Amino acid sequence: MKEKVKFYGSIFILIVFIPYLVTVYLHGSIGGLFSGSGEDEQLEQQVVAQLAAQIPADYEMECLKAQAVIARTNLYREMNETEINESADNTEESVSSDSGWSEEQMRSAWGEDYERNLEKLETAVSETEGEILTYDGDPIQAAYHTASSGKTRNAEEVPGQEEYIYLQSVESEEDIQKDGFLYIGYMEKEEFAAALQQLFPGETVDAGQLPGALQIVERDSAGYVTQVQYGATIANGEAVRSVLGLNSACFYFSELEGKIRIVTKGIGHGLGFSQYGAGQKAERGWDYEELLSFYYQDIKIQRIK
Image (cartoon, helix red, strand yellow):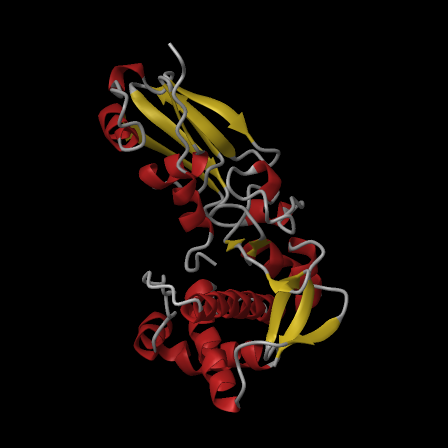
């Protein structure tokens, strides 16, 4: 019987570019959407809101500045794509980004540190005002995550992400120090099977055969699972991560005392900018340009005008 193969690439894309389906050799400028100071100011305010939602405010300033450039890049790319679609009379509903944290959310999360944290983020945004990341003149998909497996991923090894050649694997050994980097947990076989059934609707997932019947077909060079197989059906590792609610797709399954033992390394999808690794490098004196050019390859910082 011919093997059925099914990939869940769309799930991976959503995970990688949440909150968006969303340097350095020379500084330059790039034409864009914004023709007046009002639009520029609105964009920069959005970047502050995004920054608050994306990274802890107590990270080093140079790391926050790098994340500000990342947030602005993704905002700019998405806005630009939306404008292109509208100018082409595209009648499909566009996907809108998460707008970041509101003032109420910031006050709730930061408490008495609200004023200090807000001022810090505003400084990170103002000191990188208008700067975005580009590759061959176009804004990049500026993927980022909390902490890698100790090594970021090469997009060329990830199904559906091969075109993002500036997302190459680099050593980020500081990430192993991050709280939560190594997770060890347990799940009842029935619960595990019920979650996996969502990915393998053409199969009958038998709890009694797990975890052995769920085969790890392939890992990438950073240790993340790219393909798993149950029966005749194949799904990608990020899809498995999603349905099981795991920290990362660098996962390992085994059986212990009748339960599924789950081990994961890293936090997030592992592509692009590692926030924790960058934060540790910033503490050692790296500036934001060095951080960005380390985690994204052959890109430039350009200023939108």
